Amino acid sequence: MKFVTLNAYLKREVSEPSLANLVDRIASACWQISATVRNAALAGNQGETVNVNPQGEVQKPIDLIADDIFRHSCLQNSDVGALISEEVQEVYHRTDAKEGDFVVAYDPLDGSSNIDVNLSVGSIFSISRFQDIQALLPAGRKIECAGYAIYGPSVMLVLTFGDKVDGFTLDVDAAEFVLTHPNMQISNDTIEFAINTSRERFWDDIVSAYVEDCIAGDDGPRRKSFNMRWTASMVADVHRLLCRGGVFLYPQDKENAGQGGKLRLLYEAQPMAFIVETAGGRASTGKARILDVPPQTPHQRTSVILGASDEIERLENAYAAGPVKA
Ligand code: AHM
Ligand code: MG
Image (cartoon, rainbow, N blue to C red):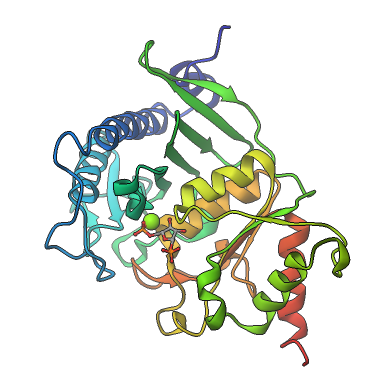
């Protein structure tokens, strides 16, 4: 079967050569990271380092290697003006960055707690434009391109420029990504949800009621039997819902409220929200559209509820109506 290569796709879809080049650089970074992930045990890159990232989480050697690969690949494009990485406290910016240069926000290795148990992990990114040094953090609505790579049974790159979402699979023999999943759409018709249920005691009434109704199955108010899946790798959980529908929740809860939630706005929530909305889904904090949340600090966290449009609207309506009555 003859597939369109990522290279041919970028030539066809992206009129600005430098933007096409940057996406190509990122694809190449993802490919290199996938090889590093595959060889982590053989190269002695499993386990932890003594370093912590800006969120106070212990970094794995592979987090640092992935960050290095991502950063160097992006910087091969001379129009990159700023980089915001989950693994680096400070935002990097070129001192001579000019308006219109690219700002790349990225999580080089999402779900890295899964590395040592050989489960899917990935990389997430967004591309927006540099305005000035005072307004370095990208607003969700200014994102021009977002994507993620998933390092699973096959390596995939899922990409959007805001009009459609296309999925590419790495053809290892041909050494290129090829278009295998054109125009990915999130179905509204779903019977699957993803949430870390070990946090149930921290949930607010709205999330508790939503999950309770799903679990009640055919006899409950939803009149259908739901399934639950949780990978603890956002890339894998979001990829699943892009492929077969569903809802993903990592809400702000009583335990993480002090820091605003668990997932980071700029390099986890925003890119995934842009992808999910473009695929026909919805992405919310419960109370606001994720892409409307104003970025204030590089590593700020947020509540994340995204996926099938009707399900997210149901949750938003419940938040708007206020706490569930006993
Ligand atoms: P990470 O970027 O440090 O890997 O953290 C983000 C990950 C997400 O991929 C995933 O949804 C979440 O953390 C899992 O958290 P938990 O361990 O609470 O289930
Ligand atoms: Mg992450």
